Image 1 (cartoon, rainbow over the protein chains, first blue to last red):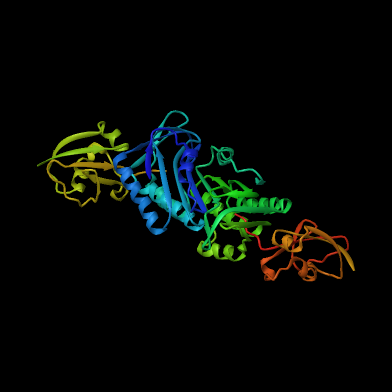
Image 2: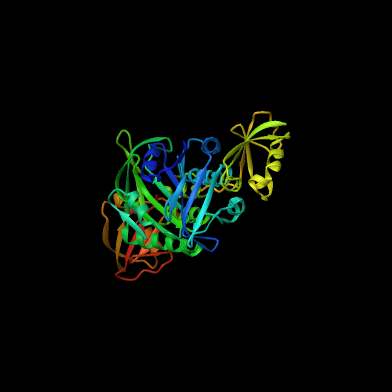
Amino acid sequence: MFAISEDSIDTSECRRMMSDHAAGGFCVFEGWVRNVNEGRTVDRLEYEAYEPLAVKEGEKVLAEARQRFPHLKATCVHRTGLLDLGDCAVWVGVAAPHRDEAFRACRYIIDEIKIRLPIWKKEHYTGGDSDWVNCERCATVGRHTGAGN
Amino acid sequence: MFAISEDSIDTSECRRMMSDHAAGGFCVFEGWVRNVNEGRTVDRLEYEAYEPLAVKEGEKVLAEARQRFPHLKATCVHRTGLLDLGDCAVWVGVAAPHRDEAFRACRYIIDEIKIRLPIWKKEHYTGGDSDWVNCERCATVGRHTGAGN
Amino acid sequence: MKSITVRYFALFRENAGVSEESLQLDVETALDVFEQTRDRHGSNEPLGHCKVAVNDEMADWSTKVADGDSVLLFPPVAGG
Amino acid sequence: MKSITVRYFALFRENAGVSEESLQLDVETALDVFEQTRDRHGSNEPLGHCKVAVNDEMADWSTKVADGDSVLLFPPVAGG
């Protein structure tokens, strides 16, 4: 299940929904708002999504993961609106029979979510200015070297 | 921090302790008690640890991860005692500046925890018999193909 | 000329000052819409960094547009 | 002969019926202890699958043991 949420993500509830007695491995990735990006001090973030297509494309990514790694349970929730430092911007959870699929599917999902969904991020910096993050570059780099978060 | 716990792992509390405004990526792995292993129906599991050396070796694994991937916050808690289906047997959490280190460090930690720490697992099967799991084989296989959980 | 509803998102919306407008455009493809509205969305991004949807379906820049279609112009995404 | 405290864990403890015992053994290394207590711990595991600690430090099978040492015999581990 893929969802967009205007409210803060209840990670405990997300985890509870993944419970599965056939699963031996559970992998979670969370993207957190951090206090610095490319050398600038960040106070908070703003996410905008075009929900109809973000949900459609998000569900497609989850379906691809399930096809690659059978017997998965996979969920992703992405925040929109204003987020403070430390807030969870995205939650990806994968429960699988074994850990290898859990890790690989979770990584696949977050990598695709970051570059395919119509979601945009605006950084608000200390001092009052702000900027839309052009993540085309960081996403491409991130897939190979881990830049971007 | 590495810990052995006789009580059920409070995953929400584990997560809270990882909070870090310099971290943009947070990866968790949980090992869950599943209902089947190598074709046999499992009712519950029993973990035994030799705590002094398990803690020492666990801290060593975490230190190795921090050395490989700088600026990590990494924690692992391992259960002992009787566990029911769905219970969390091990929790590994890694907060890092970016997602790549978070995923890789988390994977490193769980892979090493499984094969290096003096911890043993006894499976209790439907029907009443039980067996110590010889995980030397599944751990070796697991590192390459994902068998074991 | 075709009547096209153009929708702008994020940076493009801020540049255009509106989130949506109906324009009469002489266009064949989604790419034509992007280029003929360049003074509106203000993008000088490489096209490969932006995305486009036609009538709420992700599309290619070569996708044909018809009279009455809505074209959604997406600046570089940054999920996660 | 050396006085060695041998500690058995998990399967080895169940086989031995005790978790710890003091034995007089004619041994040089941790491996000697493992082999001379084979009728106690009952293991026919390849040695590479088992682990050993001497005086609460992880050790190698070639680690020398002295009079009064404690040797901990670990069957194949299965954490996680």
